[in-house]
Length: 279
Image (cartoon, rainbow, N blue to C red; front, top):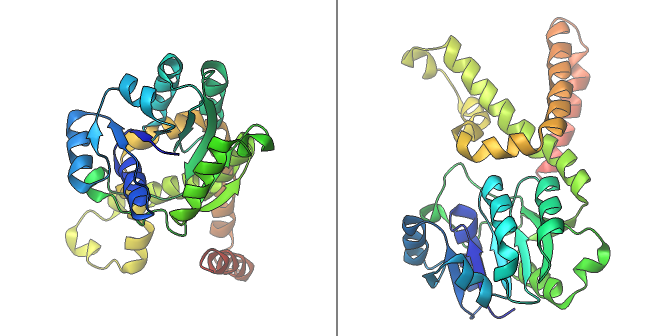
């Protein structure tokens, strides 16, 4: 893998560029984004220069789509005629079924390998990018067939993921979208709902000064932008609905047992999961 194009040079795209550089990648890294986003990415050293999609796709051996889901879908519809033959196209989309379906339909000149780095911040843009953002974090790949991971282009990409410190997990698209509905999307909506509920019921600043680190920690995700999450929610609505139903059932059970010892088991199960996540 000697050349890379990053389409969407925000937090994830710029962090990927920085991570590659820190890991020793010396080839050109081209960026495709808005003029301001490109300027920010150049300023932090995440890309060498900004170019058009046609120029980037025509030169790059790896095309990394790190846009919003809606824009990834649109790019996939127009990308194939521009691709360097044999290029690997991958993405950072938080849902996979619709993206992979589009890739199956439109990508012919190169290989597509769906991806999802499980890393991020509540902040956006290249100015918040970090070379170590993916260090120790899961990077999900969603091939249609195991053989898709054995092509020379895919092997090279996986090797760079290892060099930047990501931990590879392979899932199919359906399993990915079901799992992240619980591990990511439910967490975001729970944080948003908690912050909204507290805000509606405790409007005075002196009341908010009573909040401790627990509330601050649990509402961190509520700082996230709806513009970012709109496409995620729309493209995984069925699985998110199921996750929310399970969560609402659990909250109702807790409400019904506030005065009983049944919650002891819930505390134990919750503590077990929290401990496993922190290993």
